[in-house]
Length: 362
Image (cartoon, rainbow, N blue to C red):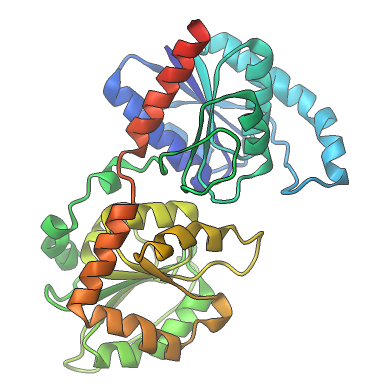
């Protein structure tokens, strides 16, 4: 069996694809895996680092919505489809699994022409154009939210890195807090805004630090590699640890009691899976998918939701601090997040891959 993965561009597309690859290898170490990608995407670093073959094809950016620009896509896609088809032929692909992004649409079209079965995974609550098209070609469509409107959708969650999916926060808490220089007993707020940080979150936390510390809350804050944030707690106050980047998100999650963060699909899935309540601050740009990503877990009771414009020191003091300082409320929110979260989406997607292959053979 050889599986071709199509999900390049951003970590939100690549990480679920790699989590599926890892799950396939756990099941069968001899399975062949090739990832389609472009020379400009993060896959050029992430895929080889995880030990998988990367086949590069040209990037064809797609409009987010049907527009007149969409009419120019077929012409630009022809060469890319041919190159994707060549990869399918060379690898004798058993199935193509698409995760959205630049390489997914040519992958879907090439697989459709070649008679290769297709599986679609959509991580966002609002699907992109590539996956909307891909979902027309298959009955095997996996989604991350239970109320997805994508055609043939089956709710499984998002495949996660094994270190996250198997994390036991209670067992790792003491070690994790020691690793970051945090107090082993104090309520702990984790703050991050993605790999590059979030200026809005940084500025707001700088204005809230004194109130957090005076309430007995300690903070682990990933400010971003290109951002400067200096907060010096007064003598006797809880720690406020600022780092540029978190290499070990599993340790950061184990150290935390609550999170303040953006609402990317992977972030929402990971926090729910490990049972961490969060205050989600969706990006105020784009097509609103971050708000949609966070709404299901918030509705389930596992988090709070605040607009970027409404995130202020007063809001944090009135909404986040009471959760962190009330153990019962913190426990209830964490349990609600965990009940909503999915730790086994990688194995569920493996089963869907086998279903698609078996159906094609029959």
